[in-house]
Image (cartoon, rainbow over all chains, first blue to last red; front, top):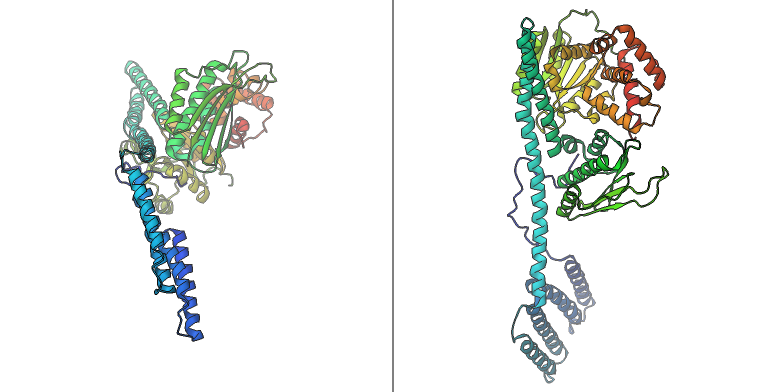
Length: 370
Length: 240
C-alpha cells in the first residue's frame, strides 16, 4: 500500500534544501494576455479587411488592453519583490508611471497639437509621491508588517522541520527494531536452537541435560522479553498492516474486553500512525489499571476516524472516571499529540451507564494527517 | 481448497522433503543442520522468495516436496514477503504444506494464512524450533495436511475471547477443558494433547466431547477441520 510522504528507509531526508519559489506566470495573467492578444488580432484583421486604411482605429483597442496587461504583470512583479512600506511606495510610484504613460499615449493618439493636458495629472502624482516619501522616511523603523513577515516565515520553517524531524525519528525507531530483529533477536534464536540440539545429545547425562535445559529456558525468556521491547519501540504489525490492525492486536492483548471501530481508509504518515498507536496503548493500559474492579471488569471502546485531514483517536472505558490528566502516562500522550500539532483531551463521560456505574474516561486525540 | 489427505504412497516412516526460505544465514544454517540431524531432507535453502516457484518446480520434478518453510521478513522490503509468498503457495500448490516461521506472531497473519483453508498450514515462532521434538511433530503434522499454530497466537485469542465473553461461554469450561481447547486450536492430535497434558487418550476424548457440547461447536472428525471450528468460535468477537 502506498504511504503518504514515506521517507526512504535507507537514508534520512535532507533537511537543508529549501524549496525554491515557483517563477511561473500566474494563471490569471496568462488568461488575460491570451484574451488581449486575441481581441487585438481580431480588430486588426477586421480593420485591414474593411479597407479604410487611413485611420488606424484598432489603436483604441490596443491601448487599454495593452495597458491592462502591462499593469497586471508589472504590478504583480513589484508586489512580489517588495514587502511592507517599501512595497506601498513602489506600488504608488509605479501606478503613477503607468497612469502618466497611459494619458500621454491617449494625448498622442487624440490630438498632439493641443497643449499637453496630462501635465496636471503629472503634477498631482508628483505631489502625492513627495508626501508619501516624506511620511515614510522619518525613522524608517521596522513596521509591524515586516515583523509579521519574518515571524510567519519562521513559523512555516519550524513546522516543516519539526514534521521532518518526527519522520526521521520514526524511521530511526523502525531501524532500531529492524536491527534488534536481525541482530540480537536472531542470535538468541540461533542460540536457543543450539541448546535444543545439545539437550538431545545429553540424554545419558541428566545433570548436564538439566543445566542445558535451564539455559535453554533462559534464552527463550530473553527472546520473549526482546520481542516485547521491540513491540514497544516500533511494532512490526503497524508498519506492515497499518493502524487499524495494530490497534486490534492491542485490544486483544490488553486483558479486558476492547471493541475497535476503525474507519481509516488509507495509510497515514508513519509518525502519525506511531503516535496514534502509542496513545491507544497507554490509554488501554490506564483503563486496565484503573477502570476495572474484580466484580466488574472494565470494557473499552476504541474508535479511529479520518475526518478531512485529521485522524481522530478516541478510547473510552466504562470505569469510574476521574482520570488525572496530568498523570505521567497521560501527560506524555499530550506531548506526543502536541509534537504533531494535534490536540489531546482527557475527560469524564459523565453520563450514567445502564449498568448503574457513573463516569467513564474518554481519551481523545486529534492528529493532523495531511 | 480441497481436503489435503495423506500423502499418496507415503508411509509414516518416509523421509520428509522440505524447502527452506530464510534470509538470516545463522538461522538458515542452524535450522538446516537440525533438520538433517532428524532425517528431514532439505532439498534447497533460499535467502529470498523470488526463486521459490522455480526451485519448487525443479524439486517436484524429481520427487514430491512436503513442506515449504518460510520466514516472514525477507528481501527486498523485509516486511511481509514471506506471508505473501505463503498465501500464493496455498493457492497455486494446494498439495504443498506451508510452515511460516517468524520472530513475532500476529493474528492478522494467521487469518490470512487460514483464509485458504486450515489443511497443511503452520505458523510458529522461530524459537519453537529449539523444542526439537515438538517442532518436528508440528512439521510432520503440516506435511500430513494438518495444522500447527503457535500457542502464543492461540493464547491471545483465548484471552481476548475470555475477556469479551459474558458468563456462561468460555467461563463454562473447566480450566482443563480450556487447555484442551487451546491445544485443539493449535492443531494438535488427540494423542499429542494427551501427551502434553499427561493424561490418557480417553480422558482427552471426553474433554473434547464436553467442549463441543458446551460451546455448541459442530462435531467434526478431521483434526484440521476442528481447528477451524475452534478458531471460528474463538474469533467470534472479532469485528467484521
